[in-house]
Amino acid sequence: MNDALAEEIASLQAVYGDDACVCEPYMSQMLVTLNIAPQRQLRITLPEGYPDCEDGKVTARMLPPVGAQATSRLAEYCDNEVMCGGGEAVVFPLASWVEGELLPTLEETPKQAKSEEQEEELGEQVLQRQWLWFIGFYTKSIRKAFCETAASLGCTGFLMPGKPAVAAVEGTSKQIAEFIRITRTELFASVAPASRKMTLSLLDDPITNRAFTGFDEVDITAAPATHKRKDMADLGGLQTFLESHGVAHAFAHIFQGCV
Image (cartoon, rainbow, N blue to C red; front, side):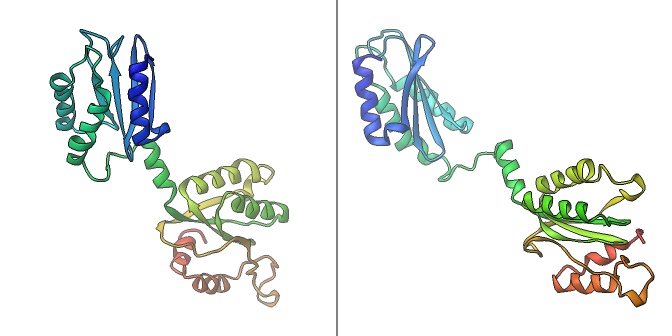
């Protein structure tokens, strides 16, 4: 970088900040990157030897890309108004024109199409509630691991073990999908095939609030005098439990076609 260009870059850094303006070699040219506004970047390509060049051409573009009309205006300005040669500085005047004339014609807050990464991030903020039904869920160590795994992934909900067993898992689609994967491939790896049946029942999507604050095992078993099995679930008690958490609608969906 020659002294004239270094002086020009220093002037830009004095206005926009040291980190907002970077000048680096680009093949035989120089590339100036300027964070000219929030979420707006101006990239200026300078010809070899700038500013002491006779035939070189200065080009500029905006990132993220702007509309066709604004792109055309910027190209026309570079072609007609930016005269490179004779040691004349053009970077600062070009940046000033973009800031004063071009940016005001764009949206006040850039609303460019969201990137796939931004869309994914937005999707990860949407909460769901996945209801699960099991033909039976008994083993204490697996029940404990089930709840701990869900909590470790940021999920909330509950597990009602017994016969049948029911669980609700609240979280983002990514969190829930990972939890289901771990449950099927790791937690249930040692469970007899006949006892592995896990049905994905109702999916509440989206939900505005979590109905549960943690992920806990709840004991809702039938009274000993009402059934010979000690681990038989008390469905009436489950219905009351769901009502107390504002999710009573799920009961009919969970058991439809399952029991």
